Image (tube, rainbow, N blue to C red):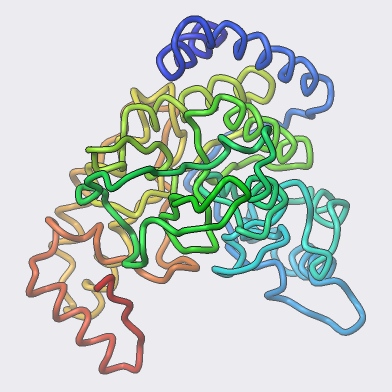
Length: 369
């Protein structure tokens, strides 16, 4: 593991810097070694997970996370093995995915003790590490030219050609902000309130590792890497699925496995299937689970047509790179049902028919353009 950590740091930052960052990484891992409690157990097809917002179950005069625990303990103990609580940190937009403070719990939901008390279940926490809220202390410090946070975010000078950049949304890629040293154009992949972190700064990588280790200390068995495909940015590239992004995941996998081998990384990459499964790496060095994003639209298509041939033919093609990996099978998520992963499996006509059927039944469709 140490060699993998060092190799990935060298690839990302070069030999001179990587030696220092490797030493800091080891110090961080040593700090958490005695603070993290390992949990036993492997995953099987019998495992099932509840995906829920922290306030989805409520009762009078009680914090929602306390209500959620009571509900799950009473009704789900023999039904589900795991709970994914969607971002429960303080936030400003995007239903929690614009995090103000990674290390705190939204006080309207409850406390860290409320989260950590749900130990009847394995817990999944979100690592929303591509971006942070514009209202976060990190970004406020950047806006005041604080030297520590000057390189925490991605600023663009001049007018470089960014036409190749793959976007999940049609909002502006760059957002201008005023600082004491002048106006700066900042990279905002998802929205003007979601400021992308600059992983070219190794201090950002160390900060994020510390945060993920904190989550594990607080009881996370699964770490969901949200929007991870867009993590690393390089001008004149698509800025999606870059080798550096895979190297960051491999670094995190090796570092976490060193002190918490019971923890699973799961990547959320709502992209065509061949790109999605690339986040398994070689089957031992990246995510242990990837979302099986093609499954929801193919299942919906099967129900609408009454014909399971496409679903069955596709399912027969599924393979895993090792017995250390598996698919996270789901039928819908907080984002709904993405159709992009079905491209190349369903025809354009089939996808259009699916869209029209949903509209006929009163469902809503979100278009990028």
